[in-house]
Length: 365
Ligand SMILES: Cc1cc2nc3c(=O)[nH]c(=O)nc-3n(C[C@H](O)[C@H](O)[C@H](O)COP(=O)(O)O)c2cc1C
Image (cartoon, rainbow, N blue to C red; front, side, top):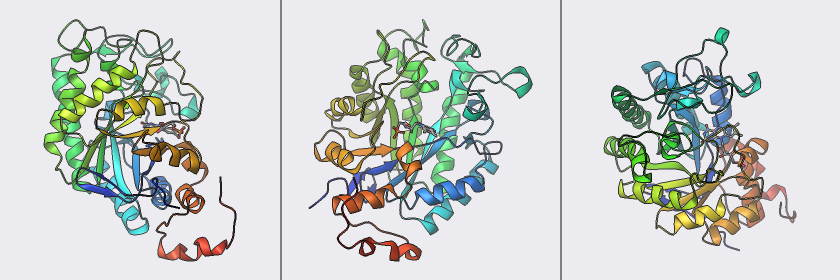
């Protein structure tokens, strides 16, 4: 039995040994943007999940672009050194290639960690001013952001470039811009959050302008040896807002800017929007995006090995990303390999846990 999920794929100058990706997942465990020992344990573990690529959580390009006080950043020498320590460890300990998601939280910044309530920071919790395309809050009880002015555009664009340069210095194999989940770039693209009347608002092309400018500036700063991609919005799941056709436009724009791949996610633009809860809910959108000829990954309730295999073998996406299923089973890729009859690399220390441990065992489903 030969598995498509476990076949290699090339993204720009980088070859992944399989098509399984650990999705970026905020850990809310950084200290002023700096990765901590938690990240050594968490990412060190996921570097041995059997995934070809692990994407480090949303890593913010400026301090006020963080979602919470615990979010990771890449905006200082200290945060660069802290993340380098984690990446160096993952290289020594694990088998996966490593990527980082660069982000700016926009109007969803200055929030509580999920386990502290997940709402806007209250006056006693050291909140900060937020920025967005327009002065519209994410939902009731959220901060009202300041509409971005000319110097904000220059500063944020520059911060993305500087963070990308730091990521290249750290030695990441892939860099991924966060253009989804209601954060700054997505909030420009969506008509729900962007009511500007200048060249950054109005038509889809205008709403895409700032994300495109960031993408082009980052592309110039990142050598072709590093895979460059973006997580994009497949749907806002709100009538009259972003649709799969808009995702296709976004993917084409990024392809023209020299991007190597996109990841189709969805939702998160407003506090009252809800994502579907059906298995692989973004897959049909990814299929449309993939038709543009862009290497396409997708995410969202992909849980089992046969499901993942079906998505890539059926040509619906080139790669799959998993988030919650990877936290639940950090060796998900090992177990998927066993179920699909594929080989997987394990670290020397764990070699004796290989398939020979289960002669004749029934494949896991
Ligand atoms: C704990 C946690 C943290 C997350 N943090 C991020 C993040 O930093 N960046 C991002 O793009 N998505 C983030 N997500 C969303 C996931 O990457 C993924 O898109 C979503 O959970 C759907 O995939 P799943 O059904 O496999 O969990 C997070 C999800 C979880 C569960």
